[in-house]
Length: 218
Image 1 (cartoon, helix red, strand yellow):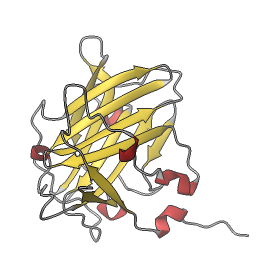
Image 2: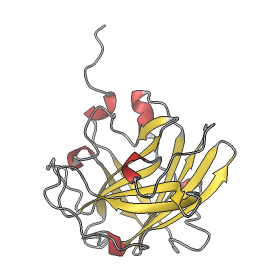
Image 3: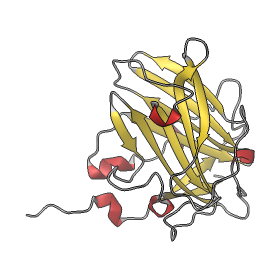
Image 4: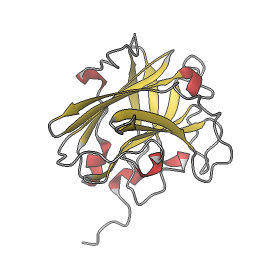
């Protein structure tokens, strides 16, 4: 039997619920339990998985908790080099547009790192990143607006982040309760775990390859 030229996940357009959580962020982080866990769609293509992602929303924005396991080495992170660092990348399109291949001003990319900041490069960090080949870029996020928290684990870490509504151009859950969304956990030791789209496709710059989040209050 001839192997398929396309990964199985490429044949589907995914839409998943994202549950409401209030308060979205406190000094202790996001506090998301198992009910906020996203399905691990990368398993459809039998890709290795080493991270679990939980996600929630409120009128204050979005929050996530990513648990990375199976590490033997410390993550490699530099606040000055987010594009080369280990951590969690998140892409959001506040218009959920799937018929464009180049990002608009409603498309965003953020990087959350378990280290790379502080004098000893051991403090977590977060930054906004430009999307390659974008027609327009989202408005810049001021320093300190993104929130990040990390817990070290024996074989990895828990990384939590908050993307405030002010950092998301066009974020309006009442008028637009659907978001284009994808993420990738990147790690020099363990590899790359994308949400659902195989790394052979340009999901980092093509919004048509992103999934849909349905913002639900239940």
